[in-house]
Length: 336
Image 1: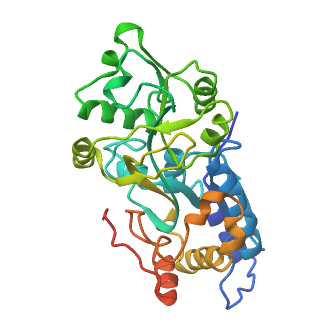
Image 2: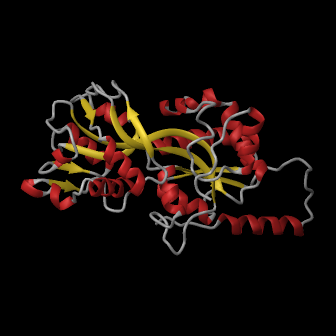
């Protein structure tokens, strides 16, 4: 059983004890007692990036207890908002949903106390098929064997929203012997590689290393959505999303560009993180960027044009101060 605790209560108790013992306080900024980072499932991209970030933060905050927690885009928003983690990795689309009181939040408890620190890398709705498949459109998925994750997950919700703008449902896809399987990420990719699935849809990084591994068995391509449906998706479900073009050569079977909708994966903190800590987190990543980018190939996306953009939530004042000093452009908040 996993037990959680509210670190703010621990910090408050520690501060009270320190005061009662009349401990001296240095004039320079102190390291926080704890700095916990919400990552992702073991072995996944979020987990790898969070682990690399944790290594960097241990050098930046030598007097802090640094921890990396398993999580995911939605769980990280919940934990950082509740004070059970200090930093988290999420997507702009998840943050927009939570801000509005949709998954992973509720209308009674929207999550509006998170602030962006730095954009890490892009992701997009991708529908992967064997490059030799006769599936070229969303309509061609009728009667096929498909996985789009599990009910309640970000990808499952996005898939249902995508079907809706094509005036389709899961029941339509399952006509004529088709089936939408409720599989995990690993199960989905294994089944696609082995030919047991005709298509897998996910909101995922690109190019995704697991899909590249799938190509050891068969070349893969991504379906292209048409412009009218992309525009309708953005109008109805597009908070945190934007139109993206997935380039030729993204995967071995990708001989033409594919139009889709994408979002940004970014690092964030609670709005009550003090400005100096947020400044030091942001500056440490930037000043050690080449080393941090060795953690995962997708971090090569971070540069002067992307670091402060695409997060949708307001930028933390500490991070904003660093970007202003460096002359790095920052987007206006889309959620406020």
